[in-house]
Every structure is written in C-alpha cells, then in structure tokens.
Image (cartoon, rainbow over the protein chains, first blue to last red):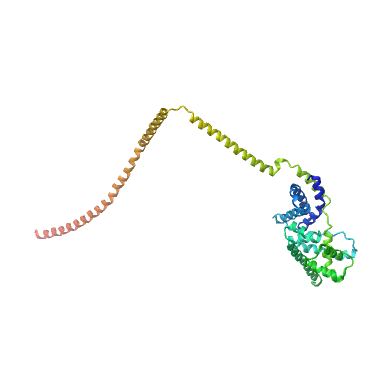
Amino acid sequence: MTKQEFVYRVMPIKDKLFRLARRILNEIEAEDIVQDVFIKLWAKRTEIEQYRSIEAFAMVVTKNLCLDKIKSKAYQNDKMTDWNEPIDSRSPHRIAELKDDVKMVHQVISTLPEQQKLIVQMRDVEEMDYEEIAEVLKMNVNAIRVNLSRARKAIRDQMKKTHNYEYHGN
Amino acid sequence: MNTTEIKILLDKYYEGETSRDEEKILKDYFTGSDIDESLFEHAPVFTYFKAEGKVKSGADLEDKILERLDGATIIPFYKNKTFWTYFAGIAATVLFLFTFFFESQFYNKTKNQLAGSSYTKQDAELAYKQTRIALAYVSEKYSEGVEPLNQVSKFSNSTLAVSEMAKMSTELNKINSKVNKMGSGVDNLNKLSKFSIIVKP
C-alpha cells in the first residue's frame, strides 16, 4: 500500500475516529489520539488486510489508545468538557427548550462505564451494525446488546431523575 | 408513524432489540417537529445522538496527520528500535561464530605442535628426574623451616609446672596446721616450766 493509497482510504474516517476518542477523552486529547492512530495504522499497514475493513481496524486501534490513555497514571480526570451545541435547523424556540436537556444527556453518558460509552457511540451515534461493533470490542453480539440496553436504560432513568429533581426539588 | 407505533419501537429500543432501520425511524421522529407531548422526554437523547454524529474534528487535523506521516516515513535507521534489535542479534551471532572458529584453530595448532615435537623418551626421563630433585629440595627446605616451630610444644610443659604450684599451696596449709599444733605444745611446756620454778626454791 502506498502512502497516497493509505491516506485516500483512511483519511475519510478521521472524524469518526475523533468522535469515538472524544467519547472517552477531551477534544484536544482526542485529536492527538487520532494522529497517533494514523501513525500506528501506517506502521501496521500489512496487518490491515486481516480485518474486514480498514475502518474496523482503525476503530480498534483508537479504542485501545483511548483506554490506554485513561489507564495511564498521568491522566487527569477532566472529562467534563462542555458539549458543543449542534447546528440545528429547527426553530429557535425548540432549540432553547431542548438545549439544557441535550447537554444533560452528554453529562449522563460521560458517567457510564467506558465500554458502554463506546457501544452507545458506535450504535446510537455512528449507527454501526452489531457485527462491526463486536469486531471492534472483541465481544459477542449478545453481550453488546445486553450492555447497550443497560446503557440506554441508565441514560433514560438518569434523565428522569434529574428532571424530577429539577421540577420538584425546589 | 403514529404514537402507538413509536411507543412500541421505544420499548424495543430500550431492550436493545431494534434494528438499525427502526432506530433511524426513532431518530427522525424525535428530531422532527411533530412529537407527541407524552413522548417528549425521549427527544433530548435522540437529538443529542443526531448532533453527535455530525461533530467534526479540527480543520487542521488532516494537515497535522499528513505532517506526522511524512515524519514517520523518514525515521533514520539509527532511531529505529527494531533495527537495533536485529543488529544486536546479528552482531552476537557473528561474534559467537568467530570465537568458535578461532578457538578451534588455536586448539588444532597446539595439538599439532605437541604431536610433531622432537622430544625423546630420554629427554622426558631427564625432565622427570630433574623435577623430582627440584621438588625434593623444596620439600627439604620446607621441613627445615618448620623445625623451630617444634619449640612451641615446650610452652605446654611450662604450664604443667605452673599447675604444680597449686599442690604447693595445699602442702603449705598442712605445714601451717602442724606449726599451730606445735605452738600449743610449746604453751604446755611453758606451764610446766612455771611449775618447775615453783618447785625449785
């Protein structure tokens, strides 16, 4: 694989890798990780052929680097970065109404276990199929479904809890 | 899609049983403008997921990656870890083989020298005799040097003499008691002499 070929095939998924890394790390760290992923992929370009897709391999490397990073002692727990508001085409009124709740979803997900975060990211955000997720996480499809269900319910329940607190707490 | 259908899909969704298409329907419904009031609480999650899917990395990330990839390809060989691993392995093997080779060469050489030497049996016997004489001389000188150390045993003789002193003190005690008895005998004699003094006049 020439470098041009490599860049042509891997560069398009850089944002997806970035989003996966950002689920676990902050934005600056996530960008650094994505760069490291590209270097690593280039160094291991012969192994890439073993995977069904270059994307799955890239996701595996990204996931591993992120988990290594949070395991390292040097890592400071500053995951509580502000969620960047999406560019929304809907009415300003609805956006204002949703804004706080949507921000809260981000906070709630950030409290989930790392594996659940990754599953939610890959399924609910990236809309990947279960086989792909299983390949990245080296888990079986059933375990992924169970964890996903757990994560979705946890998000729902936590959101309800915070809502009740907000409305009845005062 | 009506509200009941959405509710059914939602239940499936939370159990992790929805297909990708069904999840797309939910996403579209909850990010649309026509949401049933009773289901409004689910809207933030799907809105968040949709927005998250559109997040882009920094505009300069691609340049950074390309820059680093360029750097990665021209790593000089002496900074390459695997290069040094292989180099060390090869160097060790070469050294080992050389050592082995030269060692065997040297061994063969000395062996040949001995085999092809011009020494006769007489020469060997002479050498044996001379060695014996030399060793005997050394042995003799050695025993001469050891001789004075024999005097050390006399030390123990003198300590024996010292132990005799203890016997002497018991003898002295005996003498002492004897002398005391003698003293009392003399006293008796004294009394006797007084008696004779009275008788004399």
